[in-house]
Image (cartoon, rainbow, N blue to C red):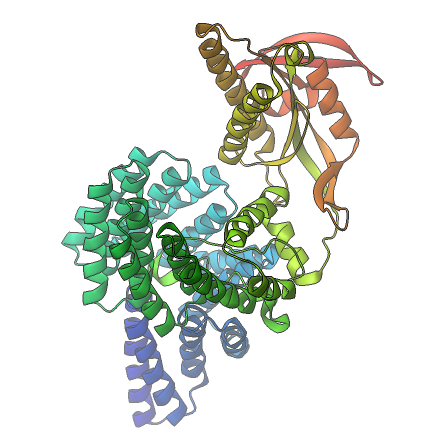
Length: 588
């Protein structure tokens, strides 16, 4: 290689270091450096330099242009060269690959490539890559609502970030821990993490992270109904993002401001920020954010008593909605834009659904219906996600059917109310429904908190399963925690009823761990359901239990005995199952 070529390679390596330093904090700058690398490498036919530039091109296509197919093409071309090197870019390439496949719903490949990234980083003893990949894995767990796993991965990342003095990563990791607390509705704890990250971001002059922290603080204070603080922080975030021309970030904050001003019924300000969000989202082709802006304007004009304008904005919302989820060739990428933005750490996740699988009917309905349809359609969309898990709904949209899946280890929870039939005979129907609704809504929140999938209710019975549709190893503990939380709620609810001299119910909870099959049944009225002997045994755990108790099988007991204090009941006769060893869970 000539002296001139060696000088060019030295320039390429210097630019490569600049890409590494800026690819998270300033993607646009990193992309420009990558363009320089590509031009220099092409001038001397330096394949490794060309390949490393293409990894950054893939990031730009994916995050900047929402073009996952072109991103994958760049990664495939780069991998052909980098697979035989020890380049840092190979670790990064695997990480980006994993992220994209995860967003496409291929969780196995997502984890496989992410694991390759971690292994490659460890072979190279590259703490920075290990820490950022751990951060990425934590974000995956957040998507799956596996908050305990997400918390562990964020904590691991924070420890390494602190060790290698990666301030950007350290503050991002703290924000990730704040997001875990936020998802668990522990808003004060989330705020504490954000405040802990803020001084470091300010001292290190990290405007992207600073703006993100202010935005997250604003959203957290909104949940605490401290609207003045919320707006103050959101405006701080907005000003920084304006100054650094972070257009995607601006869109996020504009939408948040539009939402909170709508809540405060300050519709003039709400319209202003939603209109700004439309401008920003259009500029960066952020279709899902554009959807949210149009949806927000529809809600504002409905509240103002302007149905014609509301319907107009809703039609625009649905027009984009159909494009995003309805095009045959791009359907499998529909959730990419709305979920995760690697270079800016954590963005709000949002997945949009239509009320049924026949998407083309949506646009026809809009033209025929009046403003009342807006409300009903919104209810239907929410109902779809109540009927089907998100992963199953995505599969139905992509393939028109959902394949039943076998799960070797799941934990099934059943509940019913003692004396329900007798009390129903004494209460007006409306009061019965209201009481059931109060209890089941509380159970729904508990299931969400502990990562259980609600399956159905039949009369006064409630059924949920942990460990589906996304497999995990924590499902026995998750289900037992949910059962204890349900009993805690019922005891408090009963005490309130008794103080008011009103009749109240007591709850039986039964839990069993085992294999089952889960899938969608029906055609016109689809339902997600489970089958297997484990389901029948779980039902027997409930019917053989006692009011106020969580009754578990021996199988579940062996998996949770190190986490909870349990009382053995001995062999109990179970209908059609003979004698089964059962245990009462007392507490953690």
